[in-house]
Length: 337
Ligand code: KG4
Ligand code: ZN
Image 1 (tube, rainbow, N blue to C red):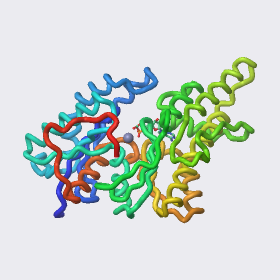
Image 2: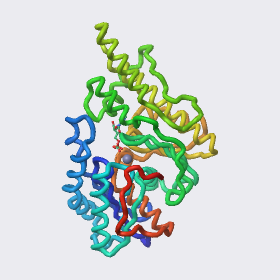
Image 3: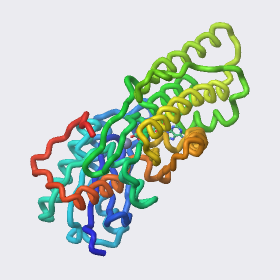
Image 4: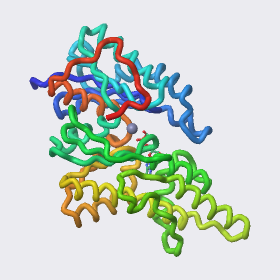
């Protein structure tokens, strides 16, 4: 193919991701996760993540090249997450990307992690209609974006004002004494619950913004658990999980579909770790169908943090003819889209 071969490097959180992409074709995708090292802390410990990235980087690049059947010398450009993310973790990836770019004599492109989550969908579903709306939901982000052009024109419509959606899942799982990361456990427990009359508040429901809030919901769950403890009534974990999840997916899908309808956009992309949630998928499918909106959700492996998403965005940036980053590219923990 005549498309350039892009090496993508991702280290914004606890996944060391390396991807190889040509155009919209995924050639290699290797991820080394340090998640087990964070389990006993109940959340990602930045310093632990940084050290794990440092150890995993070179072997993961090698595995990606081997699995794609290409050599480092075949790489035409290096793309790397410049932000947003954890400071130390980002630094490891950007330093490695600079070293590869310099050693190979190829251009370096610093790209935005959030936009990478959107670009990756093209590896699975082909070119993204312009414009599209994207809902990004993970342990670190809850963002609604209007994507006019994935390489050059992405506008933030809304964000969480407190906890990220996945963070809320993880914190509520802890209250319910479910293991970390809690999202999949709550998802599973909720499938056995929901028969009770329990209903938790919907944060920022109908407030006329595309912003989200989950800390009030978390507090409501905590109060419910405390009350049950105090009165000695049994905790029905499945019902609490279902009621919590109902609140989260109701607000996420309502605001995402509203963003499509109100902006005249007919494609919604949902990505990030929480996009694996069964209730979110089901309700998004239902509400998108009702509103005449096409729903695109990449397979779970591409929804969570990975290097292919950064390579996919790098490919778009190169194709758009944007200038490379300089070798003194800085990281930015709160890089805007
Ligand atoms: O994208 P991701 O792997 O990493 C980042 O946070 O960037 O997302 C991880 C988050 C965790 O908070 C995890 O609890 C949540 O995604 N998650 C889920 C499910 N699977 C993972 N949340 C709800 N339902 C799930 N099935
Ligand atoms: Zn992410």
